[in-house]
Amino acid sequence: MHRHVARFLLYAGVVVAVVGLSKAHAASAMPTYDYTGSFRFAWSIAYIALLCAAAYGLGLPDLARGRRAAVVAGAGAAGGGALGISVFQLLAGTALLPRAVVFGAAVVLVPWFLLCASLARDGRARAEGRDRVVLVADRGEAMVLDDELDEAPERPAIVVARLGVDEAHSSDERSTPLLSAARAARASVVVLDRRAQADETIVAQAGVLHAAGVRVRTLSLFYEQWLGKLPLGELERVSLMFDIGELHRARYGRVKRLVDVTLAGLGVVVLVAVTPLVVLANLVANRGPLFFRQARVGKLGKPFQIVKFRTMAPAGAASGEWTAEADHRITAFGNVLRRTHLDELPQVWNILRGELAVVGPRPEQPRYVAELVEKLPFYDLRHLVRPGLTGWAQVKFGYAGTEADTLEKLQYEFFYLRRQSLSFDLRVMGRTVRSVLARAGR
Image 1 (cartoon, rainbow, N blue to C red):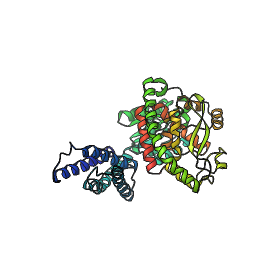
Image 2 (image 1 turned 180 degrees about the horizontal axis):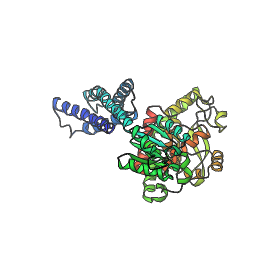
Image 3 (image 1 turned 120 degrees about the vertical axis):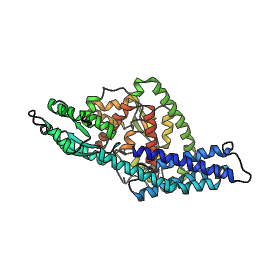
Image 4 (image 1 turned 120 degrees about the horizontal axis):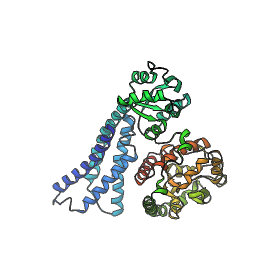
């Protein structure tokens, strides 16, 4: 609850600061003017949007783990918003907003951002204490879940007790090991894997805990709600047991395509502006062809040529091998393109052609797809929808450089397929902006 309140207060504070300073300036100016009836009203809304986008992109209020990180993010968000509106004013050749509003809001909002980040941290600490998990599963599954919860869960939790199925089994009416473990650990959630769900004595104990207010989840549902993915062991079993928005909801598919074309059209404008700069930089630090093209597998298994700005030396780009961290084939300027994600910009052409969507599973090379389908027959399910420029797997896991990484990302991709909707697509787009601004991606 604290985290939701912190988000609301952060954005409300931006509105109050900008609108309050704008109204104060209108009342004190000589001559005075009607703020809401002037052209400055619309530009103040644009400034509010810039400040909110900068705060979200830099992880406020949720992702600032310490005070120092919050200070840096708060100053960056306030300064970034002020810089952005100043650039607009420079291009327009006129003062769209008074300096007192632009810089006054930036100064006022830095301590406000810190306060909201502190409130969010307090909420996160409370949530970690509230979601205390007792896991009934095989030992290997317990170790995996511990690692998953240490990474980037959607809802924070901690495993406070682990029982094997045999340990949780009740041999008689007086034996209630699951009940005892959950009560001793003050558990708020009990998670049962498939074997535990098949044991009537364990289910009966879980029923008693449920009646006492403890939440009970299957392992698959816990992964969905707390981790934003599906567990690897469940992928094949559930691969046909859910609707996919792009296939089963025609209206969603049409709206999604309309959004894709609109955003790609805006992306073309950026591409035209950026390309001359990339050409000049390539002459100095990335000599060779401007674009990189590679075969990828699209919707329904149809191959297409993906287009990017080239980031590797020409010989390295032609190899088609997995890209590793600090890959020696990436040139100096290519590394800049990758870190800023500008290398992905030419893919707006693939979106306009209908080969890519803005959000979807990331397309893979045909030879890797053939290998993975041979090992995982359900892998082909991801090709029922149009692949994406970005996706849930990208913002949650990042770059996949091995088959093991690809399998890990598949768990997030199935989660996306299961939850595919316009609101979820917008959520992924927002997370992508945050990832790019924070330079969390590759």
